[in-house]
Length: 226
Image (cartoon, rainbow, N blue to C red; front, side, top):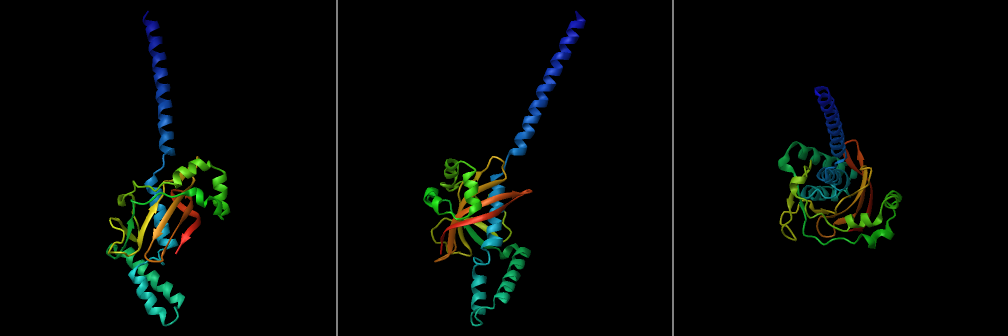
């Protein structure tokens, strides 16, 4: 009788161990496939500011440089060199960071009106490889849950935009749509817009790709520009 009890205990132990192993595997899988939306937004905004429009939207410093080089019909090499000095100064002193505002009270977008005017082959290919209704569901809606704490910018500080025309207007303001990420979790789309003052800004969609642990902009389709 005691021998039978011993066999039963061994069987129950083996079954419970097997369940634990399965549960551990599932938990590991869920951790590995989980994405941080905050990190994606942060990576993309850093790249937009630093590489795509930072020189254009630098603020007062850029305007002073334009005045300085205007009479020389803008020596482009010297102009860029001076801008790079400003960048290095900002990276070395957080007090010199400009302000970019996060706008949360914005109208939603209408992705369908832009769908037929996208020229980027890579973006069109991505759309064809994924469900258009799911993409539209994401790109049609501005992400109103974003907050400054979601971002850690190298060259700017973020504040919530509480008025239509802020008195402190260094760079401008921006907004992002909700993310659409493919099933492989290595590429995605999002809508963005940036306003940097009168007759200055752009909106469009970004094709983003994961490179190692960082998300980068692979391609950009501009819908409106001023």
